[in-house]
Image (cartoon, rainbow over all chains, first blue to last red):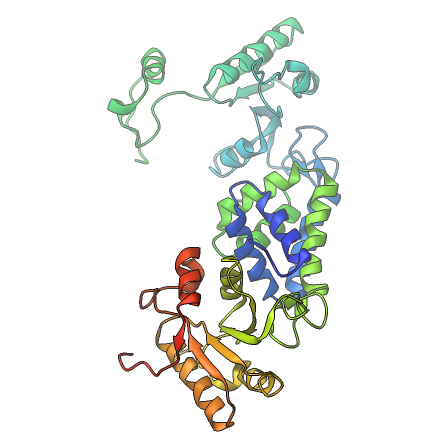
Amino acid sequence: MKLPSRIMEDAVTEFSRLPGIGKKTALRLVLHLMQEDASRVGQMAESLQRLKTELRYCKRCFNIAEDDLCSICMGRNRQHQMICVVESLRDLLAIENTQQYQGVYHILGGVISPVEGVGPEQLHITELIDRLPGLESPELILALNPDIEGDTTAFYIHAQIKKAGLDVRITSIARGISFGGELEYTDEITLARSLAARMPYQRNSDS
Amino acid sequence: MKLPSRIMEDAVTEFSRLPGIGKKTALRLVLHLMQEDASRVGQMAESLQRLKTELRYCKRCFNIAEDDLCSICMGRNRQHQMICVVESLRDLLAIENTQQYQGVYHILGGVISPVEGVGPEQLHITELIDRLPGLESPELILALNPDIEGDTTAFYIHAQIKKAGLDVRITSIARGISFGGELEYTDEITLARSLAARMPYQRNSDS
């Protein structure tokens, strides 16, 4: 669609570069913004700029941070010897959203995937190993996606810790059928694993 | 969802203020932007700013313009005595997209709607009437949505022209569009045909 102004076209192009936003939606957003106050649009533009200028990665866990360390690594009420290893910021956010976890995190920035050409050296695994010696009886909770890449990465981390001779408790988040999931429609691997990893029965008080 | 940084939260809030974008989508967009180059994000922010700082309304037809007049009003190949009256910029864009129309436009900026508290004085109707005396055998094509507000507005414009004693041919785009249909979402062929098959304006008895 030809637009009456280059400036408008540029804005539509910028928006349509975002994931899941096509030309039509981009145009709708631009038309919306054009009817907004200049101050509101300025605020949005500034807000975008600040994402890149004022945010950085936490030096310890690679979460998003405004200072050298992120708010979680600086948290006083956090159990700093318990480190949950996740693939990405999204996974961290998903776990934080449960409001049940009191430990800290380590974002790997991906998983080992030969197909995608991602090796361990591209991930923050060395930084993870380096965090462990300073901690008192540390625990590593591997919260990686239950697929081949996740399993490979988990195994690699486990091997590296053994190699370094560190005394670390390594656990992995429980794998099984999700709450509300139907046994009938669960895939075989999940079902086989939840049978193998069966737990003593206990009545669940909160369900 | 609690985010690790206020700056990120602000950006998510800004995005979720856009129409059709919820919190989850806003977060996805922000996470995407955070992984983009700073220059790309800067370009997007600048592009948004320019929407408000460099764009204005065409003094003649109220289309979006970078100068006093829009590119259509300044067009040499346009038939300037043929004015297509539309409700909004979106409708102008829809008609331009047919690539069939050679005249110019006049954007009313809305339609008369007592329910929404929009009277004729809030619309660019006076400016439309003022354009006519300077033109040689002008034609007004009323391309308003075929609903009660559109019909009311068309009738009001018709009455104002008669009152001013102007000799103007008034036509209306053909009703290939169903009653209650939206101009913006009509396919190009239907829209192009309704322009070609425009009829002399007459007050619609059934609405």
